[in-house]
Image (cartoon, rainbow, N blue to C red; front, side, top):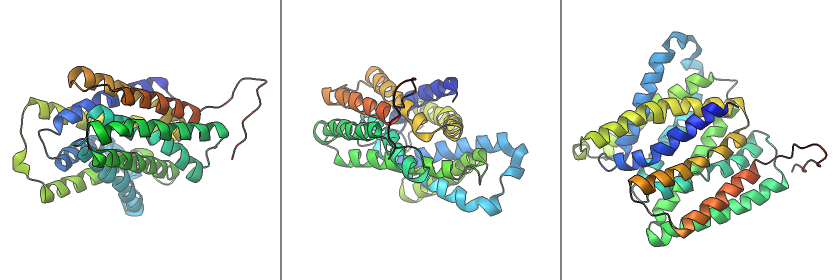
Length: 293
């Protein structure tokens, strides 16, 4: 695992949450998500075009379609709508329950190990999510926001497992590219059908959000994330991404004046401990290995 790439990914994602939270104020959510994904995908198509023989669209279109549905249409669509109902920092913490869900799904479908320590970690994760959710249900009065955030986490984890499971059948790079193009196109179509494009407020805040989201937030981040996932255990990569909501909460508090509440603070601690335990392995000599389930 390349820790340099991992640090870069964490920085990009951590900065992206408050940027998206600001951008969605000026553009309907599905259109906002669709533009970011589709433009990001087109950028990657241009870069990858010289290796188009690896695309094999006729034989692989089903994989691309399912991946696009999970990782872009559902994940990005639900995420962007959810940002309307909750502060960016709180929403990101709930979404980053994904590594815990990813640990479970990777155990079921990818054959990654499950130990007693991981089970304890999962229990602590649920406690942490409950604490964080209390803010969304009471202070911010948005049960739908909490629901959308957790749905985003589940869809994301499922999409990651699907891509990892099929990495030998489909070129990993083209899987990422096509899920952005197809998923982005679907979101754009859905946005034009269900949303009012005339409500878009074109200003530097929106334009900068779209530029960042299409390049770093989508194109670069997607390539980095799935490269790390395909080169290592999905659950291990997931563990480190908990640093993203911590960074996002700090940035949101500084630039968007969002409060860091007591429940949010303790919830982050519990979920962080959870993700650490879910991915913990005894490596020191002389220590007994944990029993796998």
